[in-house]
Image (cartoon, rainbow, N blue to C red; front, top):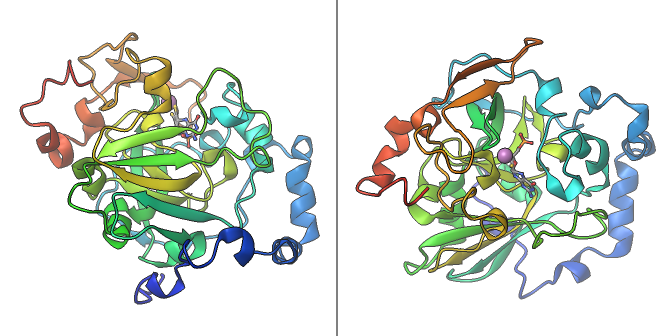
Length: 322
Ligand SMILES: Nc1nc2c(c(=O)[nH]1)N[C@H]1C(S)=C(S)[C@@H](COP(=O)(O)O)O[C@H]1N2
Ligand SMILES: [Mo]
């Protein structure tokens, strides 16, 4: 397991002092790429040569077990990494596994902006060492009425937020995904890129909300949102922004890509709720597991996480705030 190393403070690159472009010279980037090994790079650049089911990230993660694990049968790795929504790489479920090899996940930094004591930038490798990485098996429910059970690897987002030091006036946190053309050259039109999502601060501070670096004990495959994403398992999957480059604290509810595109279907809260058919029926879900013919099962309120999160919404009309 990873030992607490006394915090990421010492390794944080302050954006004020050292702009990323200066810090990482072109030569450093190229040297880093060479160190990965030419073979690995070549394989990643020729996706047609490998069956998508075999796309593993190179890096194994040391993880500790978590009390937040559910007992449901897990979705096989080969399905969780080949049936994806990551529209930056195309709108078909198979597109991310085919095309996300263009995403460069090192060097990678996450900027902390908005209502914080001080703007700062953290390097992904420092963020990953900040707390022990837990393996948490979570239910994952897409608003398209399919679901998976995935062992995610990460630590509670609340730990990162404590480091980020938001001001008391911060009421929401917004996540912004990468949208660089060099990483995502063929983003579909008609969307207001970058992908943007958000949570109310108390939702983000709930320990279930996972800052995620891996799945199945290895670094996230690109198509699952490498190198860093969030997973809030009581909400529909689109709340969980992938490949995050910026975390922004605000006092107003942030705009989100899907809420802008189709507000009746994609509410800001989007808590899993079998009783609210927000444009499509949500009472059941197709559970993608190891069987050749996935079963349709009833959807649970808050995806089965009511004990941990229902109190966040006490007194709120969940039909109005869907
Ligand atoms: N940046 C970004 N994040 C995203 C999406 C996306 O298209 N782009 N799709 C969302 C949706 S709709 C779902 S269901 C989950 C899918 O995550 P998975 O592919 O790891 O299962 O990612 C979410 N995060
Ligand atoms: Mo989704």
